[in-house]
Length: 287
Image 1 (cartoon, rainbow, N blue to C red):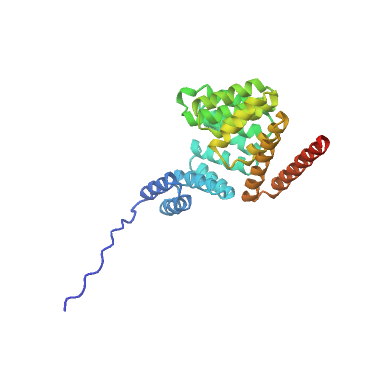
Image 2: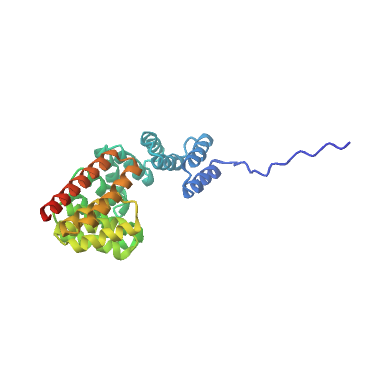
């Protein structure tokens, strides 16, 4: 009797750290960060001096929210290769997420010192300066990032205009903010964040009809944005459209409840109750 042939595995076992590293990069592209970490870890086991594997594993850890592990990996990458620009950028981002703003800025400074035209370092440093409420410094960095716009992708430009607009809004430059949000919308007419931000700026200017228009556009693009319902509801109340205001506030409370945001949910219910009491008092006065 002939013995059955053994099944032959078709899996190709990686033979080198570089193969494993490339596998990790593929998983990053697929947004499977846990699997990417496995590949990068195996690459490091093959070659403990593989700086790029450390810095890319750092990025994967950032995506998973493990910022402490990320800082450890990028620090290891920089010990091996002090000229690893990506490691400085990733380490800066990890520190930013850990709210260690001074350390984040120091890492971005290292990148700029080496690559004075690296728009990512300027943009990221701008985000950190914004967190520190250094809005003028943030705008200066966003301007530097925009000065290299010929090398900047459209999605990157949209984010920079959005964030520069927010910094201008914080400084009270409402018209400048609206200009930036409008530039973002011109580049990406489906950017709900830009519509929401411009709506807030229009409301601050007292342009209520434009604010309603933009909150409506934001909600068409992102129907679950509870804050947009609240803000549009408040404006409808200011415009005298009380039933529309109630409808918006009820929609907001529903979304806050579904999102598990109990504080915002309770606050919105209180707004609804106040508006209903106001409407009843008006009805009683008319009667």
